[in-house]
Image 1 (cartoon, rainbow, N blue to C red):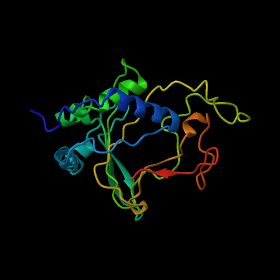
Image 2 (cartoon, rainbow, N blue to C red):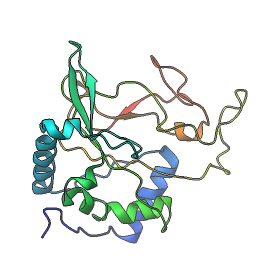
Image 3 (cartoon, helix red, strand yellow):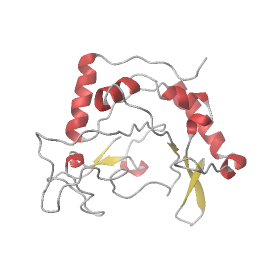
Length: 209
């Protein structure tokens, strides 16, 4: 009996549309996946783990992320709990999110039917605590030379992995610090061109509200 529902895959047509949009833009917004009840239980469980002093001291050296709670300093310099890692070891709700539809079937449509799980974290963005720099997640796995502007449209690089981000609070305006993407920049073969004014082929940041 899980607080996370099994969900249902989207139609073949909608799944194909989302996968094609992802391949074109490098991201796609799929609203309304989780229910209010699922969001509530994930937030409550996550807050309880963040506030657990014993968990904050746990350290597993053989993990890629050895600490369960990663901190980040806020604008006052105080270290705040920021990222909850290794979540599937903590509660079944995080495990059940891995196969929650339509998340799983969309991942399979984009990465492939044999795709596997590689990590699941929860970020809690307190005021002044966020990932706030332009970056390529992980690395530019298929870089092109400096004098080449991009990958050619007819030979895009393969999709090795994706990040599925699920907002647990409303992000209704820029004041709430929405996730932003540069559309199409996943095909550039380069790291961001600028931290102040990033763009790719004339397109700047787009916010996901």
